[in-house]
Length: 166
Image 1 (cartoon, rainbow, N blue to C red):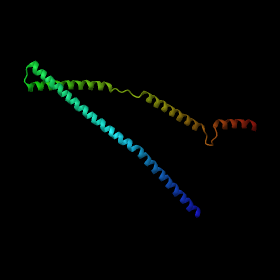
Image 2: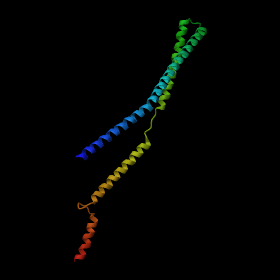
Image 3: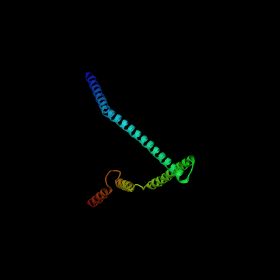
Image 4: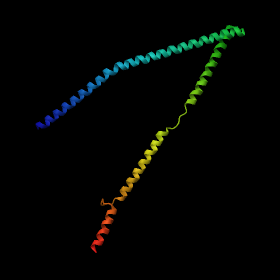
């Protein structure tokens, strides 16, 4: 009886030690990863802010180009300010739509995918290997008799025993 309680105590101690070790490892991982995750979050936020500022700058740049084009229309075609602004912004919009169309066509041409030839060849080779292994296994099983001896040996033993008996 004392041995069973000692064994139970040892098992409880092992469980407690394993739990302590696992908790310590988890805390160590947290201590290492939390600062890295915070730094990554700050970095991602800064990249997002940079993208927003860049897009805002691009919008201002293109608005300025549209105004510059409007001033040109006003000077070249002697238009009033409102029609010149309309034409300037319309021309910039058309240029943007043309650029978007060209980018879409280039992107579409890059989206051609070919099948994974090496993977297909490897899968076919594996399938052939499995089929041949199954066929060999079936042949080996068919070659065995119910007694576990090979039929060729039994036939040879019967023919060898028959001449000796006569």
